[in-house]
Picture 1 (cartoon, rainbow, N blue to C red):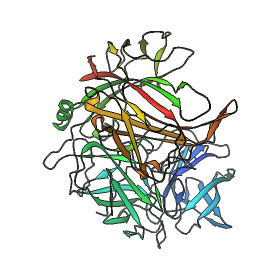
Picture 2: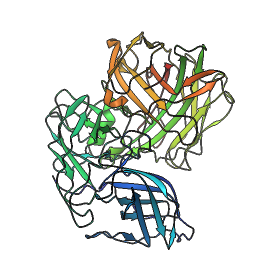
Picture 3: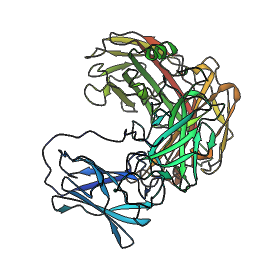
Picture 4: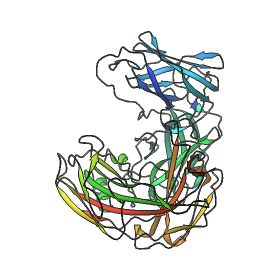
Length: 540
């Protein structure tokens, strides 16, 4: 099982050389991208880490990697100083805006500084927190979405190549901890001391191997067995190392005897088409409304926390099924950046239009030209947010990949409401059992979606994290595991008059039944909506 799985290698970027002094804007685990201040955000001894910034090196760097690895690449050197001791990280990828490097295992733990020197010009020293272990799982979307997991034949886990209860899986990441040998001298496989815990679904699992891969410096493998009772296209997986849980990815698990899972939003027929060796082109449009009430505070009322319209137009092949990432399976929670993390590369035009009650004209704009990803934040200045039980029409004039279309969504009536949370705070170190009233068994295949958010503040130095869970609506209760809550930061606050408002939220809702639409270039498109209701309260 000690073999290279190099999803972390990035392509070289072409361009002219940089001449200004380097500027560092961020230092993170290369797999998890966890911002400083979040759980498992320290840079582990012996791990691969990423430096973001500008003028960090040439835009053309044709260096190749071979053992022994060197501490200089394309004129770039790095220095980390902790408690008066300096070490030289090993660059393994140099770009003008990003450096990937290995932190030497001999680097002392503690708070220090890191500098980048390129063409004789050093950057300003930037803080770095060095820890013994802080594991990150590689994913395709900066720490969110599908976890880089293979079977024992090193075939990537996807919705059409699933694991099964009892199967052995290999999770790929970095940050398990230091090795005794030189990090750049060669491969150094072998179990590291730990302790380590793998969370698969809701079950803690002891790994059978946790250490370096058999090919690549800094790259770790965690070998685990899928526990019984686990099933779904989007089952959470995470590793606790150094006492902290890093990012949470997902894996696909099906019953024994089935190669494909069955609960993806793209539909069983398109999963089967993909499994049959064909490509699938899928469009996903969502309208989201969040209404939050104040919990146990001296002010009353509610606040719209932002209504959104967004869309993705994606093409999947059997080789890229890894990127078909839509939320979390029922009974589980995962880290939340968006409920749609699919790769979106089908151009559907320069913008989509959204029409409905009290909406001023305005496009759902693409993330960038031709990206296939579109988003619009509805605010009081352009709309009075979204309303339930009314019609909203989304239309596209068409682009290079997707033709023109018009589809109307009749929005759902919010029914499920959280209960028993008024006046409470949420502990991040204990399981949280939430309860709700209401809910419609005809929506979201009889499921509810529960999500939460906590942030440290409102300025540019603030950090935040979110989670999302699914549960059967009929259960009327669900327990969010403490290891999921531990990935949130403690909530900060802001002032409204003389009242301190916590930057912590939890909400519940149900996806409406999707309405399908057709457009040239798509196998299927769907539009749906969700109206979340929740409370404002702190995570402590």
